[in-house]
Image 1 (cartoon, rainbow, N blue to C red):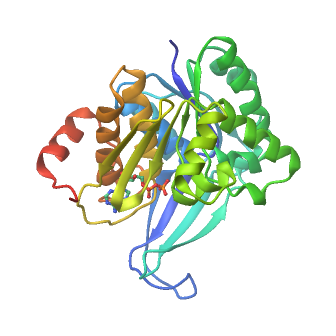
Image 2 (spheres, rainbow, N blue to C red):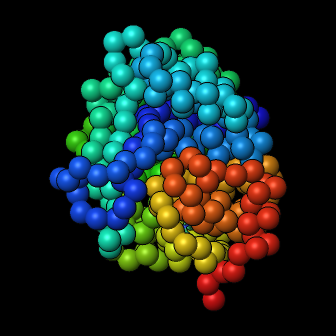
Length: 315
Ligand code: ADP
């Protein structure tokens, strides 16, 4: 029992309206949209009716307000979000290349998001949580590493569970971070990698071997994200479920992985079977890429059911 919590960057995103190269020319931008992987994730949990809370830090400015109002409206506990008088809310500018690639300009480390720390409110939220979701990217912010170490201990002590999205290259983090990374993988009840991250987390270059190695290390279940191709769930018992992607027009891919992961987790926490949870997660990821703005496509079960009824899937 207890809510699902996440910790980390609460941002706004400002995006180029046309696909092209880089930010070198003046161009039309649209936003700000509420963003930040932990915010996207936890908002999706709340929209599905799961208890949800977030630990973060925003500036005392309109960008912070946009995000906090969205999270609050959707039912996320924001009592552990600090508001900084000194640092502005973090931001990300994103531009999509014609080939589908993305270029980002981030202001995170020197923003409020980079000043996150283990406050009394953060401890209180972690002490009451039933599930902790961690993003690998969190391991690059020192205050956040401390929060995650504390929250992981607190959740485990209460018999709760954890999920981990290993969205960081193991080689890019230093020794101490590498140890925390490995512990987060080993302790994960649910691991949510995309293609290369699965191999990097296991340290091998074959998908099947990676799955075997990670399950042997104690991972409870692995759900692999495959973009437009859908996803695959690997159980600790050696089972495998493939779920084909929904056929949609991709307008903005940012946030799909977080919507997907949050939906799978929340469905499982509600007692749903893996196959059904995977199906809903695929729908949530696919629907999200059809809307501009990383949190604008987040949906509850009613909207997902309508989306599923009206959308074809790849063979
Ligand atoms: P990440 O953002 O973490 O790299 P993905 O891009 O794989 O994750 O997206 C997560 C999930 O969202 C996919 O497994 C799939 O179910 C869904 N999804 C993402 N992009 C598309 C797309 N273009 N068409 C259909 N489904 C998609």
